[in-house]
Length: 73
Image (tube, rainbow, N blue to C red; front, side, top):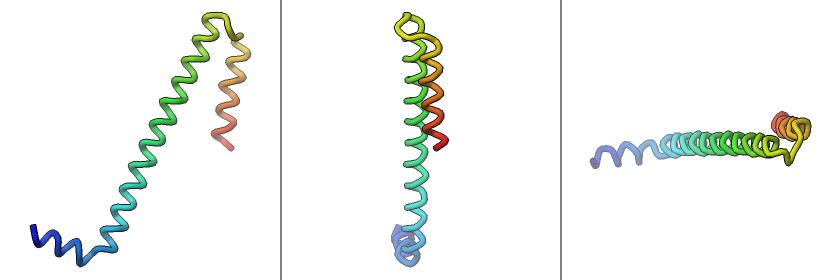
């Protein structure tokens, strides 16, 4: 166990950089997943509004296209 601590202490800058990279990858993965879940939830809500007649299919299509335009910007 002591050998591990010594190895980390000897290579601290590299360990710090590697830890930062891992943290960034994890954060970006979680953010991407959350964005996908949110987008799908919105699509389902729009479909429900169209099904109950509160919104026309044309309005729903415009809302979905508006979301894509924001992503590409």
